[in-house]
Image (cartoon, rainbow, N blue to C red; front, side, top):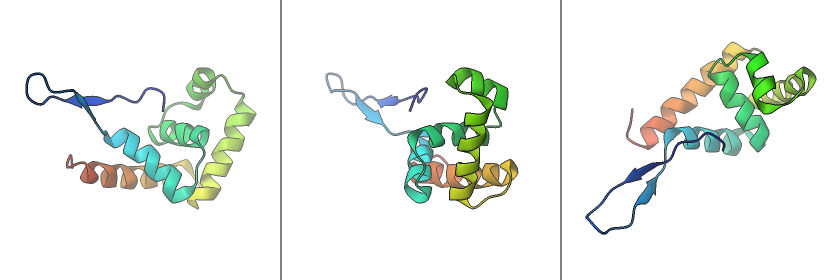
Length: 105
């Protein structure tokens, strides 16, 4: 996913750096696996969960308002929510689960 930060774990000198999974990528994976979101729906869902302004989402993803509206409707249907606040609540629940999976929460 674009913008995902990968942390590296350092071992002994001379050891190869090994990527360490981050909760952000785990959240995306949980959204895709649990709810069957597409990659684009996942990217938009995460932005909506983070309460990013819809105008910013449209501009940054170079999509129309109608395209965003369609993606948002499909995301809500797949998650079984009616409002963005419900999406945010589910996103935060999954975020907490992702952090626990990586020992950060």
